[in-house]
Length: 148
Image 1 (spheres, rainbow, N blue to C red):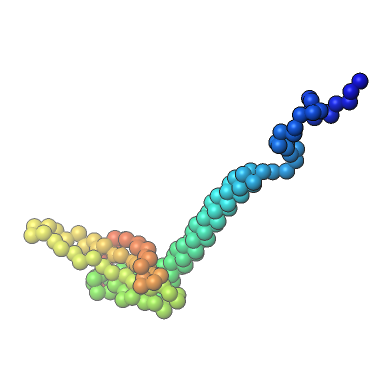
Image 2: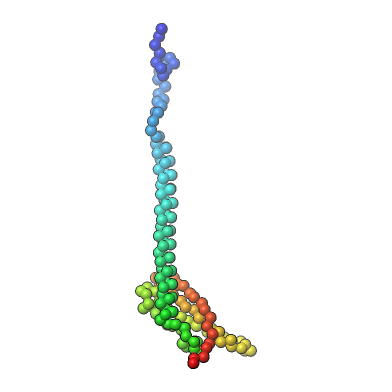
């Protein structure tokens, strides 16, 4: 009886040179896993940046609404017969730092035979940011009234 090696069919044959590993990862598997993980982290970081920017914009918008309220309290629209002279407010940046409150009345142009309805377009503007490049505009219509 001859004793044979369990991994070779012929004890006299040469080893094939191929060695099989039974545990661990190959370099390709590690590289692919690293690439997938990197892409996932990149997506998460991009989403985090977008969320942070959205939070800042929401905070600024909320402050702009607050400035609207303060401006309306400081410069209320009262009943007047001179809407174009009494209602406008020149830019005021003293309400909240970094924000400007302003109110304008659109110029009214009547056609030759048109009857004046005494209705005026009033624009209340709050602007902020670098060079006031962000703004919120509230448009209202005001009818001319008589002061008592």
